Length: 609
Image (cartoon, rainbow, N blue to C red; front, side, top):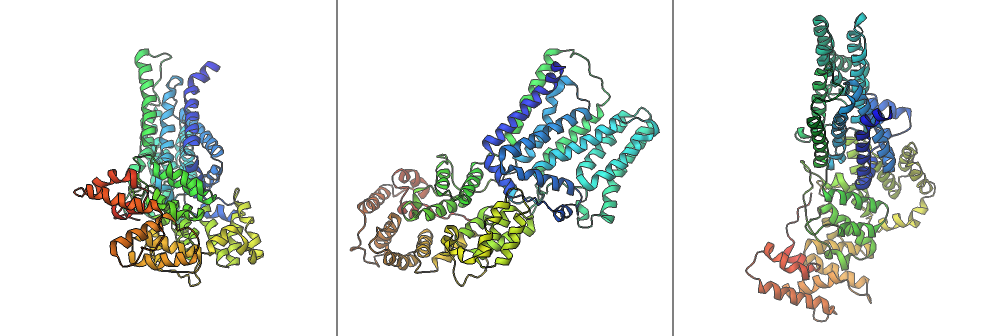
């Protein structure tokens, strides 16, 4: 008994453990972000809202289980249990012989790929609970096929099962019931001995596949577009075009089910006739599955850097943000999102003027087959921390309507409402968070500000952000270009608030606008009399003073290092005068890469998004 169990399940269990360890070890921050972009409410209304479309039960269950990624190890354990159940049902539905246990790894790999190849799609997918929907949906489909296979042919039980199972399943699991219907149609041609039964069952299955969605659309689910009624509970990888490659795991799984349905009556010998060939094929299948899973596993480092840095910002771990930025490999180039997060951390630590350009700059394109916008992947967080409360609120609302409400959106809507003094709205968001499992306490801790608004000014997070809030804060258009909007917003302003005023200087510095720089530089010096001038501000003043000679810098107390770096940079550039900017970069960077001089002359045309 034990030998048979190990013979059948040792390999699948080892594979499940490997998947679980890989997810927890390498994707913990990714899994935590997935649950932040999820929302499950313990309320009757939330359940009813999910059930207005076909496949709603899968969405409800999917969002329920996704919330457990708050603790990545716990969520991964639940996911692996579902994957294990799916493999067990797969084995019984298609009569997989014990010695062919390697075949059980194929559905495991296909479903795991649907979760780990998403990348930036996690910000844009409208199907909630996606991580668990595929294993649950295919488990249901396998169970339907298994039931059809084991039902006796007398009394037309198999034939009756076809329309009843599809009709009862489609409202709850959507497309997965239709995949099962198609599989049963093919299986009917093999499993039944009578030609009449073969034809009748196949026709009934196909008619059920076509008719049930149409009937449900006309009578129950009017909110679904008629062109989508055969794809409910399937994520839509659609922007301006359909990205069909992402549907490959579902297509491959369906093809596998259809092929196995055709082999359902083939009897497997007790022992393989050619043991060497058999074991070679099993090993080859295991290797193919492992290599395929690894190949399609999304491994973009910048995507993971952004998620970790975002998590650190939410935790006010500013040093953690910088550590993650520094963890880039030498050949990596940061995204604009990473650059903005790094600058925010330096600003909070009060070190932006000394260190902003000591970190590698870049504008690496997001590794996605569509145009990724900062507003969706981190713009709300950036807007909030720079005091652009109306923009943060606006994008939370717009994306909530477009992509579905998420814990992350509710949290920012709550804090923005408090900062705007809209306490009734804040209480509504608190009440929503109270209906969640892991964010109820988060919501409750903000009730003190609703009850006593005077405490807002005493809160360290809120008091810092209020320095960046203008009294005439209005909502204009940012064209989804968060970085460009903030640079223009700050560089065209001035303030006697030291925190806000330094941000105007930093913005002018990044825009390399000499005319904007000088008044903000002098105002900064006035507000910080008697204090040391940060290095990058000195470098900019020393450079601009020599470039235009319109401002007398002879009396300014520049650090000797600032002057020496300028002279050295210019001398080295003159020695290599015939080279292009791209050829100069590797020559200049080792010695001057952390200076504003390098930034001004050699970092150009950074493309924001």
